[in-house]
Image (cartoon, rainbow, N blue to C red; front, side, top):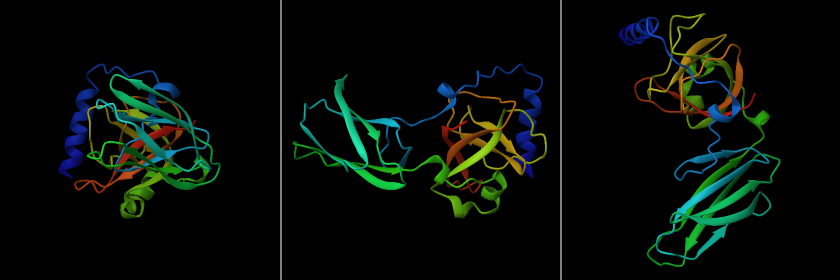
Amino acid sequence: MKKYTFIFLILALLMFVKTSYADFNLSNISQNELLLKQGETNLVLPGEYFEISINDRDNSNFSIDYDKNLLELTRDEKVSGNKIYYFKAVADKASSTKIVVKSDKEVLKPITYDIYISPADDIPLVTIKDIHDSPDKFINSFVRLNARFLGWSRPVNTNDIWGTLVTKSDTVIEDNTGAAFISGTSFMYKTDNAVEFIARIKSNGKAGFEIYLLKLLK
C-alpha cells in the first residue's frame, strides 16, 4: 500500500507540471536491439538485420562461427577501434543459435552471442494481468503485449500500477486487465490507442517482475 501511495503522489505532482512527451513513432520507440548483447538471449525476427561490435584495438584477426542456414553475414567494417559485423536472420522458423567470435590472440577468450530467431506471431500474446498473476511463468522469456503507453498519466481502469520504476524514462502501460511500468524506452511516450509490442520479462526482487520493451510491432 505504501508503494502505491508513493507512486500516485508522484503522478499527482506531475498533473500540475507540464510534461513533454516524445512523438510516438516506430523509428524512435522501437528498441530493436540491433546491436547484440552478450550474457543474454537476443531476440531477432526473420529478415531482421543486426550487428555485433568487438573491441579491436589490438588489431586481432577474428574468425566468426555461425550457422549459415540461419544467419547471413552481409558485411564487416572497422570503426573507431571496433570491428563490426553485420548479419541478417534468414531463418523463417523459430530457431536458437549462436555466433562465436574467436581471436588469433591467445589471451583473448571466445566471445559468444546467444540468439533466438522467431516470427512475432510465435511469441505468446499475454496480458499485463497474466504477468502480474504468474510472474515466475514468464521470467526470462519473450512475450507480446497489446497496450496503451500512458507516459506518467494515471491509468484509466485501475488504481494499481504493477511492476516498478527502473529508470526515469520508464512509462506506464495499460490494457484491459491492468497497468504496469515498462522500461527500455529512451523517452516517455503516450499513445491514443493500444499498440502491439514484444517485451522481455525480467526478475525484480521488489516487484517480482520488470517489463522491458524490445520491439514495437504495430
